[in-house]
Each structure stands twice: as structure tokens, then as C-alpha cells.
Image (cartoon, rainbow, N blue to C red; front, side, top):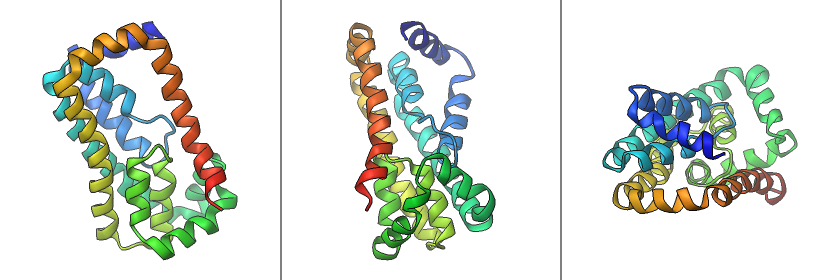
Length: 193
């Protein structure tokens, strides 16, 4: 894990760090299972002076990816969309997700955008349930923006201290991040009735 961490940090010194972050945030919001946060954090730790920029890149790409997920739900729910939802083990919760949208509308997208809940499932569902697109975009900008810009701001101000902390506790942090991702899936599977 330490080798992967060092390799990821080295991306900040290449011209490929920002495009890789953009691409990862884009595809994660519509179908890919790996969140962009670890790359955002690694880049921000390596270059704290650019951390807010990395947060902005992540936010913009994630919102664009969310719009792609919305399009998958609106136009391809019966083919691609259902397969993605099934991949995340949430097919049996699909009607419950619809009930959440019926009651809370885009607030569901906002919560999914901030939390470790798989955001892509909710972007696809928003398109499938025809949530107002402008409202969906606003909720995505607020939710994803809060999450990624908060990370960027924290890394900007505390990046050097965070780097020292990560260097010291990389194994524990890796396990904690893995557990948080798993808990996001468990939360959806068991907390949504």
C-alpha cells in the first residue's frame, strides 16, 4: 500500500495528475466503483498549494459524470442502467429508491453526493425517475462541491501536516478508507427499507 501511495503522490509532479483526477471523478459518478477521493487527497497532499484546484476539478468532473449517469437512467435504464444498479446489489431496492425520490426529490442526490453512498446509483435513478434536470444539477453541484471542495480546502491549509500523518499511519488509513467504502454499500443495502 505504501508503494501505491508513493506512486499516486508522484502523479502531482506530472502533467497527468489533473486529467487522471478529472477522468476518475467523471466515470465514478456514472458507473465506476472507485471514488476519486484517494487520488484527490494524494494530489493535494503532494501539492497543497493546488489542492483547491484539485477539489474544483473533482467537483466539475463529478457533476458532468452525474449528468452522464442521469442520461443513462433516462435513456438506457432498461439496458445499461439496470445492470449498473444490479452490479451494486441494489436491484431489489430500486422501488425504495424511487419512493425516496418521490418524497424528497433531489435532496436524495445531495445526500448521495456528500456521503459514501454510491452516488452513481442515484444519478442513474434520477434520470430513470425523471427528476427535474436543473434541480438534479443544482443538488449535484452543492453535494459534490461541498465534499470535494472541503477536502481541497483542508488539504490546502493542512496538507503538509496531513502528509506527515499519512506517512506515519498509511496502513491504518488504507483500512479505514476501505471500511468506509464498504459501509457505504452496506448502508444502502440495509438502511434503505
